Image 1: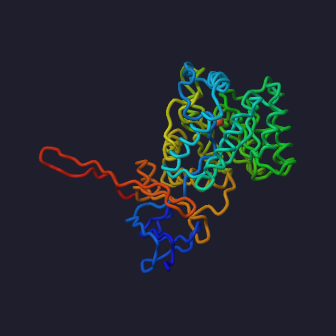
Image 2: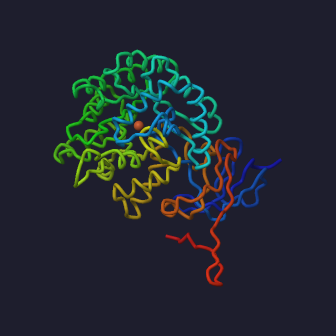
Image 3: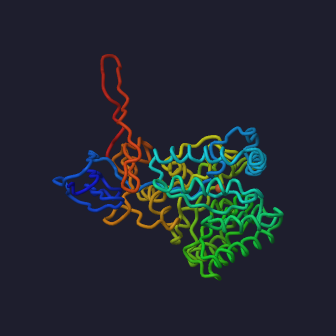
Length: 426
Ligand code: FE2
């Protein structure tokens, strides 16, 4: 009988170690020199990068792949996107939502994206989106971890039935409490919504992930209330602020007080660079603000920061690839994280940092961890960011779920045939 069900040989880990990985069942059974071991199946990584799977901490699976339905977002603003989504959710069916979400999950798996935290709109009285996403969560469970956030898109207090529907969604099994304080009618209502939603989370023992201050208004300071409630209710390490784009425009003195408070409360942050760069600054002329929150400054204070994708082909964003390396690549540029250490950190942000934000258990490449990983056609994390290369093999919970042959371009230039040498060791 074979010692391992699956043996991946000669992979380079993100920290540079070259190792074999032995998988038994859905667990990593051994790491190290396993060349002589018997295995049900062997895959030679040939020195390629073997990474823990990509994790997306911010997505909208109920809206994805709906671009153009029923029309496109002409202004490109957040507010037109919300209005457009309002039109779509009136007419789309539960079955259509399920089909689009499963399409996206297939795509995600092929990119080595094996865990997603998705917000699901709770402002539709029928809760068809919630039912659809709960169904999808069960279907994909064998190969993709889907965490759902109850998201009152039209405002927890602003929408007349959002409170009741959000609580119903949590009763139905949605995992995390969401909110959108900057969309409430007043700053005071925004703060009140944060307080009530954090109380609900504390009473139910749930995590919190709010769309927070997704605006260019420097006075949008709901992150302050979210941090204070986290501290007051003892929710340390269980609360995330998504977007935080207003922090880009905030007064520097105010931020110098805010960041230590976030660190003390262990509030994490998830900017969504593709969406932030596209949506923010739409009301500016020039200079035009780009809405990226203060990533390096938060990290310098010890605040955990991940990169999120947010949208792929939906009312807010026409593009997207389900590739967290695209997300990190854009984040790296907009946050100006260009030193070798910062670039490596951008890779960590779409893997281990995001996994920590989601509280994923048994994540990583160590003995006893869940056997989920991806082999990339790159030598190291920085090269992966530069090339955003093919995912040659994706293993989820011990099973090979996606494979792709190497596909290098072959040149025929003036009698000088050859191959493009894309890979260069750092
Ligand atoms: Fe979002």
